[in-house]
Image 1 (tube, rainbow, N blue to C red):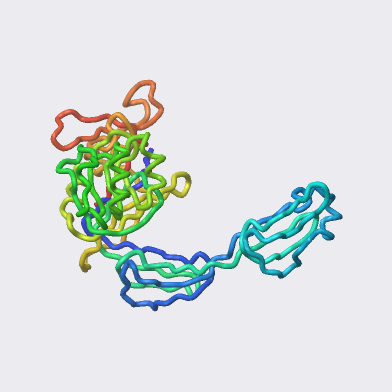
Image 2: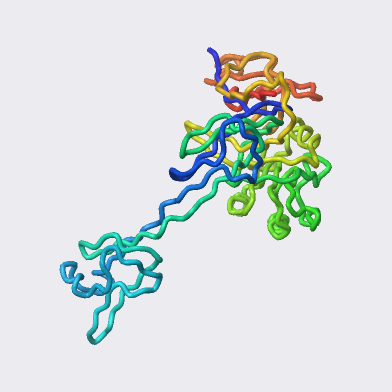
Length: 355
């Protein structure tokens, strides 16, 4: 039996292709071969406005067929928020007002539709690199060379800034006292995010991002709504950052980095990642991370307790039933650097580390 596992990338130098799409058809402002910077606008579009359906019949307390006699607007008319759409007199005067600014686009069935105006949107490159492909009116593909560290949890935000190491070890948590005015505009690196006051302080100091090994479960909700990207390399819990990831990030302390908290699980998983732009190297290969068959000699990372976050080398793969008589899953013996005892891990609790 061949066990196929997902790859996680932890590479000191590779090439990645990043697609940037407009939210609606629009204008692309760059050409193939152009060099772009993260803040550079690569395209503009008009995002369709929201629309609201207002139940005028219910608001006025009249039958649907009688609504038209009370209307104060007509199809195509522009309205502002709070404008009177319909009104009925009597002992108790009833008024239906516009909940948003926009244009009346439909009337019927006792209801009225208001569509807000389209909003102009600018899409920035987000990464420093070379435009490799342009999708006319839709978006671009940017080629970036640099170090890449993929994580296991992110808060869906993205941004960039200068990396700033604030803890001297991969196990130490981020504390409020570590964050001062010098952290403004920086991407902070620490071992664990477990302190809500530290996150509040980071927001106050307008940091550009946070990279940690893990965050405690009680921090997930607060981290999800933070105004900057947060990436955990190992996941949720009290898990130190892996030695390899901490060493690689520490090596680039003081360099600019792009932090992408994109995160999705399921059939089409998306990993958050940190990308540190570096000078190109002819020997650098294009990053591709398909599922790969596990084999002896592979470097793997454990993704579930009790050994979550550990990285080691596969020395033997055991088929189902050999690891334990009751086991229906294959397992692997993993040698962690600096430890004499081999860890016996179900293969589906592992992911291959591509360097």
